[in-house]
Amino acid sequence: MTKRIISTIGLWTIVLLCVRFLGATGGIWLVALISVLTLREFYGMVERMGLDPFDRFGMVMGAAITLAPCYLSAWVHPDELLALAVIVFSIRILGEREPHNRVETLAWSLFGVVYVPFMLQFLVRILLITAPHAQTGLVLAIWLIAVSKFCDVGALLTGLAFGRHKMTPNISPKKTWEGAAGGLLVSAAIGAAIAWFCRSYLPATFTPAIGALMALPLAALAVVSDLVESIIKRRANTKDAGQTIPGIGGVFDLSDSLILSAPVGYVFFHLL
Image 1 (cartoon, rainbow, N blue to C red):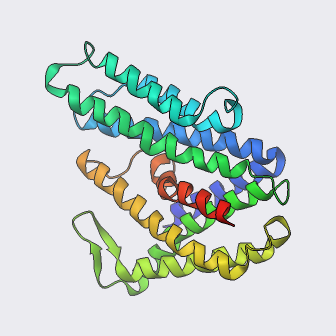
Image 2: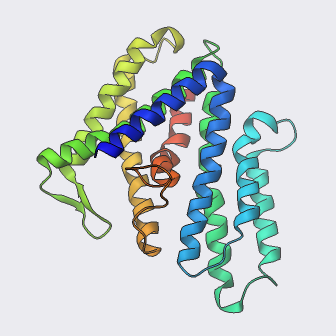
Image 3: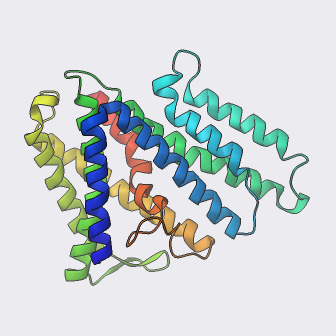
């Protein structure tokens, strides 16, 4: 627990310093780095399943897809890059893998690109929002990260204190319904607090009440994201996606909460 707390504080310090001195550009490159490292760990788990994904090309395409909304939008869109990845993977699978695992290799290689960089590029799109304030996208991205990640913290602490009823014993035995409820409440409180303290950077419609309400489905998706990663880790017979971050695990263990919440958050922000 101590290592997890220290790592959490350290990571938030890095994020805040990055955006403080580099602004949205720093945030975009940080998202791209996290995206590529997450995909690397994802493919590592696929290899532990006994398969051989197209990891190098997948990570190159992952970086391009994540950065496309910022740097490539005049020439190509992320969905077109995703289509290119499908074409290249499909051609390569014909002669570069053994017949008995071609289908699984193709499926996992493609799923990795879709599930990680394609989903996380919506966080880059959020960072590019510049109305009503030049820093609006930056604040919205921090808001999304906070409500997604603090759901984990709230769920952990509430589950340790009050957890009695297992949520998904066959997927993640330590998760409880009481912990999940606590995580949702913490996320709602964080969402309302950031909406209040950063109101000068946000649209007038983004009130604390709206912030709290929007945080609830995003926090629920963060829980689902964590369970999906747990399913993948169980299939790979591994406890953590990596050992990069003491007390937390790998980068995938850090970014999993954002994978499903990023595109939904992007839609919510545009509805405002």
